[in-house]
Image: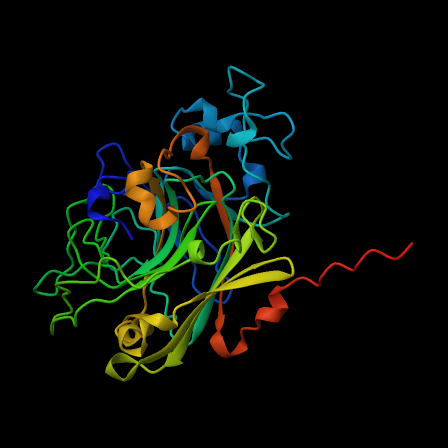
Length: 369
């Protein structure tokens, strides 16, 4: 996911997240029996329409601009604005009634845990066993612009040292026991980016690693991974696209076809579909090849930890994701780095996943006059 030059962005910067704080809410995942918790970030999993002004002010750490009551919005978070006519960029869309969404702001991040303890333990990560499964989620990222990266991904956390013991890594105050395929906080482990995106481009990337030692320690991984990116499928994705219009919510479905456990686990195919209304597009992972994907079969069977983050700096450091179609002058800040929402996280058996069922019936043609 992260490139080496971005190690301090979002995860390990001194001013970044205080992930040792208490859990910030539960995340209900359809198809998963256990209760899971979100830890980290600068905003919580909650019914957005029930957020009070004091809650919002606390969530955004006193940054009044993120809690503005904006004329024309379909709901109100707070009214801390000095300018009541300020831009609607800071007003996220309202989720459907009763739906719990995660609001994600720039510089924030969350880990999915199976336990909410005072002290974050290495085995508190919820382990999602996704081999033979489809995981889906809905995302609204209309305000996530060029040079920004809204990421929804899996890693084989916790990090293990060469003795097989849990390692806090180099970011104990912000991402304890974190590991990924770029060794961001000192620990290597397999990573599968289900989505790294802004409103101009999206990439899905499996990252294999060398075989672990007998103690489970990973010593090296493929940093770049084997990515499939919408920028090669233009105009299927982007603002006002007739297929996936990123000015409106869309759904990401990732299917891991396969079965087995441990050394006998087999990942035969990885598929990413994006759906919106009666339209869809597919990201092709077949160029990765069977040998590459096979390295991720055992981690998927054993269970991987879910991570959600929102990071980015300037166009140079994000050009691998979005250039083209983005140019070379954007910065991930201000109104170009508005809030995003993620909702409807669900897991089903891959054999029962029906893409057609997720497509709305096409609109009828206008009657002849």
